[in-house]
Image 1 (cartoon, helix red, strand yellow):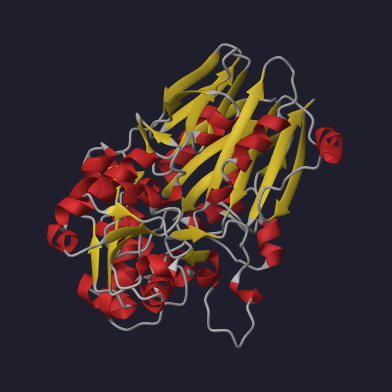
Image 2: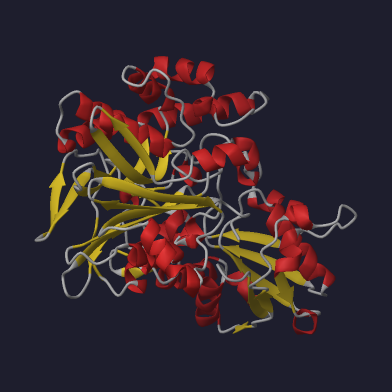
Length: 506
């Protein structure tokens, strides 16, 4: 369950060269990525030099048949970008969430730009100061606004789009996968020099439509063919002839987020030549190989639906233990905790997952889980299994123990949030009430992905961050945390501490 973790965003963007309305493609592309951002969504289309925008809170909605023509009228044009968002920077009150909903737009002196962004900017104050030279009243609510303004500042200084993007790649510390549109209808996308967040490209079988997407499922739902995953530091433009790819910056190394494989990406998405579900099945097989003594003492495998299902199949295949499908998600129970009565002690997760007590009563159970971050959700699940009569509960966790915060777009930005930052697996087992907590090894994770170890960002499980400022911030946070200082929020959003860290980095 990832303890209900949040990721920054999902991006989808497309252009049609037969002047067909682009909105349906962008709409379905975002619907397929609702899992990447529940807080807000937005659509932007381009027509006759104008941007047409619709932004709203919550999930991408179903559209009633009677409202379809209204949507087409509101969002005309053959070029569009969209975004689903969770906030991992800025404030989380309703007013700020509305203001920070993407796509974002900027205009000045006849220049206009719109972008959809996934990631997180670490050197926010530095970028903000530069933007202030052209936009003295600038105040941002999301990192997409920083990227959009940073690009347009470059254009205002006389740079062409390619040069403005290159400056962004060189001067912004963090993770960013971006799709955008200029005032003349130029359509482009790019990634940070480490390629931390995903972004792929594809086209329709008839060659009339080209698209960028955070995940391949959004290409699939539109019937598109996947062409490639953007490389780190790559800038891609689109014409009728197709994609034009240019490597603008060579990063020290590729550092693709390893957590995408374990938790965030949909199981039917594909990275390189592997589907995510295939990798998660291998995670399960790895856990069996690494914990044979536990397997010998188990009667059955149970998954935490639905992110633990694929690894449960892997455990079943490698161990021969029955995968008992005795845990099911109430698919349409999506209410948050505030809807519970104050006298009720049940967590929301207790309502969302149904466990069939007769199937587990008296059994020794291996439970497959994608990750343990704070531990609260996992503790509730273990307590429920105990109430249902489970004799032994062993947690098989596909993502290795998380020991440090993510500064690149996952909402776990302080050490105090992380149960693994201060406790061993044995201590964690005692805290959550399990008989054992068995994490997959880092070596097993890397091997299953098929990627080289030095091509993955595993900062949250190794403490080694791919960008220099993020490393310094994380080290400073850890030192302060170990000394007992109270963590009042994300360090990179506290200006005094940020300036202190940055001054020692130069």
